[in-house]
Length: 373
Image 1 (tube, rainbow, N blue to C red):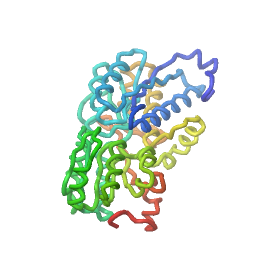
Image 2 (cartoon, one colour):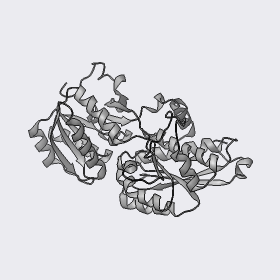
Image 3 (cartoon, one colour):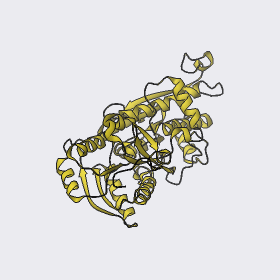
Image 4 (cartoon, rainbow, N blue to C red):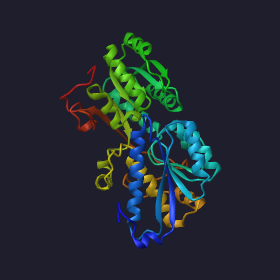
């Protein structure tokens, strides 16, 4: 029974454990909790299906969005032979730090949120898969979107992890192909609290737009201090700020922030209405967040593989590697030779306390205007 006590038939089935790893504490916990809930929803729905051969159990683990913690958690999960596969990681710095662990212990995993290309493209580890696109997809869409709005003079503020440095590199490459320019860039640490020096320099440079490449907690601190110091410049972010906690923390200051995110809003995905409806029925108190549907897809792919070949790590890995046009709530999933699934990106703007798809916004219709427009 969905959300209730297992039926007698379910109790007689072999239990298969699947790990979920993400940031469930700290500043990025909203994304992690949304991902965990979404993976749990996939498990509950599968267990409610009488045709399922197995009873599934999600084993959630908190990586705190910290690489050292992620390695410890990945090792704990990988050495537990009762766990057949994992739905792993929102934070790119953690995901890239753990790939060798999963490979060493032959644990197949499906990344549900981390977008650094090297997670899949930087190795030949057949255990590592990703369903949520990469920052290459995002940078192409973001650069085209922002230059198309007329922003030609950029400053990039990025965190100094592999995630932020990767965005800086790809933005530089992409901007070089346009008539825009990056007039300056500033690297800041993820735990930095005061940005007065950087922001006053930016105020003096007077770019048309500040593009932030990092995660929500850092993005919130920078945007709030821009407001306090009178740095009245359009603010844009990468998908790392695309969280309900960003607009909640900033309130009215978030208004007009633009971003690009891998994938479309859940309700617009092929199976999105079903996902949104079932997520609501499940009674979760926290939102699924933008990457939630991909955690659902990752868990579903793993369970589909187990249903086909049984709870055997190597066999599940091989089935995942051969994924082609596999139907999911996010549309057909196909892994390329590096076990990566490309995803089209969607443009968003913060409007009235919510992230709104750009085409549906008052900004796109001309009823409101971004800074410098």
